[in-house]
Image 1 (cartoon, rainbow, N blue to C red):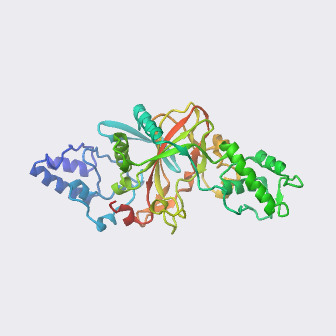
Image 2: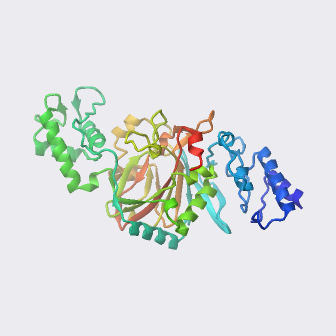
Image 3: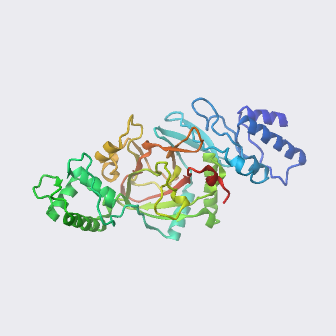
Length: 433
């Protein structure tokens, strides 16, 4: 009987493994398990006790199994195998196959979930009913109990100087260039009419030609602009890039069963090394009221020598998030879609993207290539980074992952965000906390 089960697993056929504990298992079973783990490690297979072993989920276009390592130390109960095994771990990504492709998953024992590919550039998935209605209500209640605060971004406009964006270097600022100047400096998104109104109110476009020349851009006019925009943000918060409130929930500081179950589902879904699931496991719950939105952004930064923010207290850091798992906690009455403005584009040019105003989802959501409807319990998953083929660890940012939240035009919107934090340092990422 044991030979039959071993053969079925190593050949990729579906077989459900019994949920034994080491205390309950007879000696012969323990011996069999040890032999089977060694055989699986040699074959390059991966499974968790009690899981249905499937064939296609983590395979690339060449058919090669992308899940290379078996955490035999954990499964055998023998503890950490140390630095040598950690250095052999590799990141894995779900392969989308094609838009419309559906895979069956078992994220909770005895319950089936469907993973549907909705984009290939970037690769994006959705899982309907990832959370039940009751689980969504419970997560919202946890957030309310903890208390929410205004969502903020890093740009505040408090610096003494205001860097001017003169994209074509013609020594004058067009309306679009002023808009980009204010986006970078103040995290505020204005349209042409807003900028013209500001020029009129402040009297700084002296010849009324919609351009600010070197003569018109003085220290005095910059001071007037800063004061004007700061007041505008208070009076019209919907002009900010992000208009919402949020809180953070820490799985290692709670015994809430849903939070712990969420961790297990992520582990089964991603098949990433368990240390990446357990470390830096905090997640965000966000509430958007009417007009609530979040303009287009990347969830992670380009790979460079700067320290990742989750590894330092310094404000001089970069965001390092390998993948994003977002769950809708309610069905929005109207609006509130998650937009991917350049999904499936043939090309991408950052300058053109910004100059066309496509970051401003509050105004241009309807022009996005892909919009995901917010439905209660649905999860949306995507990878912010590729995998470095040489190291098997964090690769370049996928530039097509620009995304954001369209404005809520009726009702409210609740979501939760969970990011898998990964740095350039594999050993540090996989150290036991």
